[in-house]
Image (tube, rainbow, N blue to C red; front, side, top):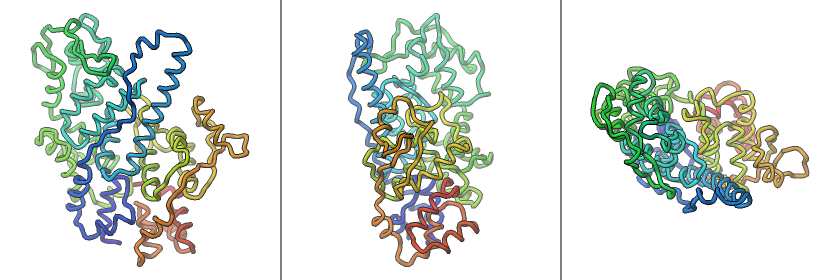
Length: 459
């Protein structure tokens, strides 16, 4: 299985990991052919469509207390349903590259919404554009009700500009801090006055509250609209560099190589911000496969959970437990800590989360018990109570079913235990891991021990 090492690395970064069953499909391919195949299987951009929402929330919230309470409970359930639907999609889809990049854009355009339908719409915008054109995505994200609401652009009106959206558009979404002035923020905010949405979640330009006066933005003067501001930002190569630098950290190494990032920015800018062109360049670059760039990234909580689901074909009697895992590990989908998103990297690990990370694989794969004390959301207490198994403490049996027969039967018959171990882990085997392998008499138990190591947290 040594000849698939670079393809396994590609699947680790461009997807959610490589399964043994993928070996027969990929072992004869070159890395370039594997890259092409990843894009081909990700042509499909089927949206998540589980939230149907045409309620007039403005009128509902003016109703009695009972109606409001029912509305809030329904919203809470919709948020959970949406979260689990995306986890399920990532765990089962063949369009892995698209979902992996949707996860990146989900964090790049970090947003919270108190309406699940708005969150679903934004997620689908990110999914449909995940491998498409960045300019198109910025335009659509900027006009989404979830983002307009989150960054207060509903309150951005002529004579009383609200700068929140304009500032974050520059600082976090496009050109990056240090490449614009406070004057640019103020003038940009004026250009976005009137950008709003109606009760059905449709973008609406309200001309009667739009500032149609002259504006000076980044050295240009004119009667700018919001679209003009976005186009001006993308005309600046600093935007291509900012996005490339962030993608490098996500796909390659937490410590960017300035020369490689600069080359990525050139490709991205010259391709008029076509994301596929940039990713093809990265995935076919020799440096992407350098030893210093393998097994060195910490999996995000979602990548860890989805990777386990895919590798071991896990099904859940009560999928809601995944929400508890997300919360315990510090990454609840659709609920980033702030507009800057999850910082990622080493920030994923602290003494508490590492304990959960090490225990989760054996819990899912071997019927273990995990204690969620101190990590549960108060609103989940009723659910947790249903999971008690003759225990007073919040200790729950996770009702997960890995398909061990499918997993074990997918392992090549001639694969040694050492080869199996190295396939399961991104870093090279150290002495401790080698001892684990040599002392193992049962492949199943060996695998459970391997995925319960700190090394399995790396990709």
